[in-house]
Image (cartoon, rainbow, N blue to C red):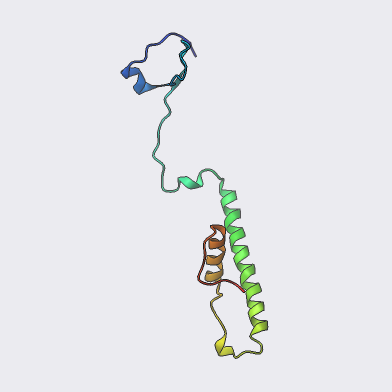
Length: 114
């Protein structure tokens, strides 16, 4: 590391990232220009480790399964007096999983558990 007086030229700007002055004090700071990399398709997973993503997806599956079991028991008790042909079969595992995902992202779904 060295500190010296340095004139900013076009050639030096291609290699070094010079700080922009908001006040002229006669001092400039020179750092290496960061390498810019295009983000990939899965760059959104980089902030968290794989174990965190696994725990999030496992929790989502557990919530969907519990919702399916509870909804099944509620429907069974409410349909005990009703005709079996009129039973609403919209609460399947894919539907409860979709409801759980939509709840995480605060979106609406065409069906809601009662």
